[in-house]
Structures are given as C-alpha cells and as structure tokens.
Image (cartoon, rainbow, N blue to C red):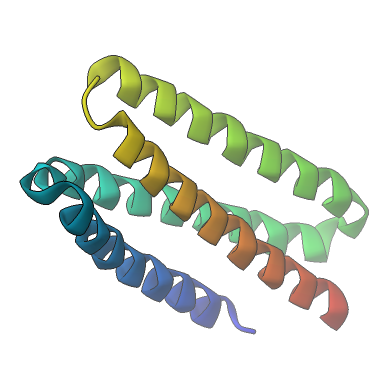
Length: 128
C-alpha cells in the first residue's frame, strides 16, 4: 500500500471517529458534550501526527536498517502509551470535569491507532 493511501485512510478513520464520539457524548451527557469537541479534535490531530511520523520512520527503516524493526515496533508502542498516559494526566490536572469522557475518547483513538498501525506493519512485513 502506498504511503499516501495509508495516510489518507488513517485521516478518514479519524475524521469519522470524531463525529461519532461527539454524537455518543451528546446522547450520554447532553449539552456538557460541547466541552469535549475541542479535546476530541486535538486527540485526532495528535494521533494522526504521531502515526504519520511513525509511518515515515518505518519506511526509512525498511530501506536502511531492517534489522532494527523489532526494536522500533516495541519502542513506538511504548512511546504511544506513555504519551497517551501523559496527555490523560495533563488533562486531568487542567480540567477536573469531564475526565471520564476524555479518557473514553482517548481510549478509542488509542485502540483505533494501535489496530490500524498493527495492520499496516503486518502488511508491510508480509510484503517484504
């Protein structure tokens, strides 16, 4: 799969996730969901940027140093987890209200990113 298609599909997934999550929050919490619109968009931008950089590094490692790929896989997953936990703690310190909804949004974006990136990496490994 070409990098542009991979990135475009990832962007489409995030663009669909945002309104779905926002709609679910409106159903659950009513007008309080408006407070989560900006954090949902920020999460999408963060995970998209992180995934874009990860894909570019993966492409580079495939060409230059494929023996380092297993270390890269573990490192990128750990960094994603640590950054996600840091974002959750930071949000909790800055905004005490709405932390449960934010954590749910963060979890959905995290899982979507992990699943998508895993499929991408597996497809690249099979093609190698």
